[in-house]
Length: 230
Image 1 (cartoon, rainbow, N blue to C red):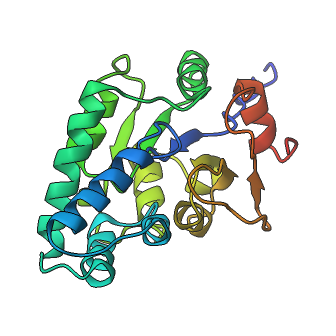
Image 2 (cartoon, rainbow, N blue to C red; image 1 turned 45 degrees about the vertical axis):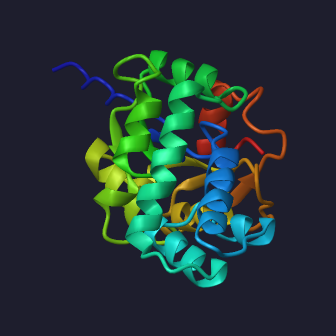
């Protein structure tokens, strides 16, 4: 009997899991503007330090922070609804892609490496962004209104990996905030941090790429997942 054929080599990485706001699209200015508008219209005060403190957070948790620190008499659920209304309207007018993001997404899709969107924004905003991309670009979408525990809890990344049928530890996660990085690392993803609105400190098990996604291609991602790219 002839030798058994070699088993196919597993894909490295098994998938790439993308944060959205600040990583895929530069929507953080939309969120900041909406926060200022809502707080000031309800008689409160807001500042950039507060705005940066909730980047990447679960929306209801962020809204509770806005209610408390902004000093406004509006329930968190209503704050989330008002924020989303403004951000979605602006995203429909213009989707501000981060440099290199769409190019990397396209290359990964062509290479057969599945991608998932893992965002704390709700499905209404995520769909607005996804609709601007070719069908099938994301094989799965996990949003803040579909999980019990938002970032920094690992649930969003674990759920995305499960939807793709892969182990989160075999995936690359791309994040722009400390909260998102904490979520990805807790899920044991290979974590690529591309700081945008807030800084991210170096740490074990992560790579911080200050220059963002420009110059990152499929070979770089494969090397990163294999522990060879820094």
